[in-house]
Length: 541
Image (tube, rainbow, N blue to C red; front, top):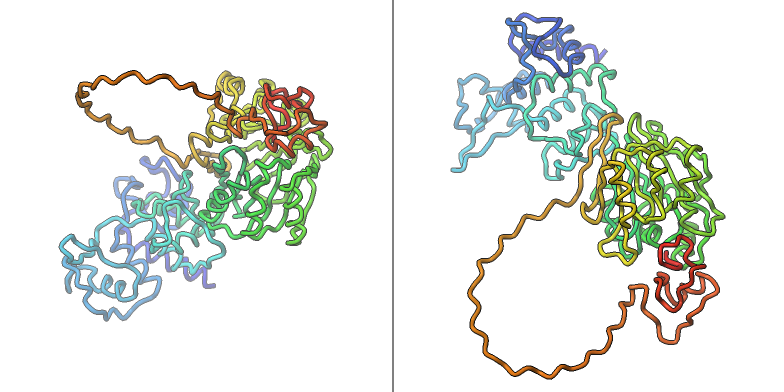
């Protein structure tokens, strides 16, 4: 009954706000967007067209009309209120009593001139933020969850109202993650908001975001599902854990519904220990591939200590994150000798947009998946940081991605991404994004449309200083050359030899006791039997 009465009230209200002119129920010649929503509201006479048969979809609503709507929704009959002191709206002017009452009730405020005087600007366009407040108050919508937009800060007066509107899926904002609270609201956009309020069939698919977090030489991917669930795939190294934590906090995340470790290498799981100590984690999924490093052992110990539900992924598993999406395990191998080959490979599909997350899976794993799984995906997370041992031409042909994401660190000792991989992506005409140059990369999609935003922008060129004439040099006697000692390789170069360390190792476990990151070809301890992926590094993580 209350909804029926309110719907009738809205009809009366909107007929009062808009000009009382003849409605054109069918076929506005100037409407090319949101035709169904506009027709719906026209048919029930909430909005009307103009005598010339147009709708004027891009005309704006005004601040005074907004005040009228709020006061009518609140059924205000007593307009006694102090003079708000606006220079452009005096007692006796049209709309004065309504504005004064609205200011007293806190629904709306005025603007301030540079000289300090206040004015109301009654004919100024209504903004998206102001409309959010009107709809939330009009329908008394409850706040069911927090929804955040990049351009709506905690200081924005409409933050809570916008969040409520988004939680009800009345709005999803723009594909770049913004809401545009100060954007002018047009008649066609008002029609969209109102239609979604009154008829749920007009509600859009909510947005999903996938963030490829810039953790340098490592992987960390945050999935924020349409229903607001959060899943973290890998967490970078221990040194980069603060970056992951800072990013999660910037998204106002307090709980991770799922944490997934693709395989036990430190550049994928090292950050998890600090993440688990910072956030509540409801479920942890692991490859089950055992590693003897302290990083892996400490992680398992912490999961057990915190009593986090733990499971080992199996090929064919369906991960239940959000009923609006499909998240399938395409590969995992807990018995793999090479830890990279143990990588959990997952495919995420949201309606028509999909993602393939490959961990450090190499060409052997790719070959296994080709023909056995549906690999075609809109976005590909390039395997093993762009190593030549992953992302084969046959694999790219099977995936057919529109874009590829590479996660690697600047000047890393492995030379990632390798030129061969970059060339294969280029030859396949696949647009590539890299965390090293773009920072954190975010893909936003509603299941149909999708867009990419990055956290870094190109630096502004610094003008070159005007050269000054060099002073004439004073001749000095040539110093006698002093012989320089041969420089020692950098400790992280893969060629550094630890004094007294063995030069032959039985296996990688033994080698990593002396050389945690492995050694490069040319090092006395290098042996081809330890370089399983033949990339010139033995026993690398």
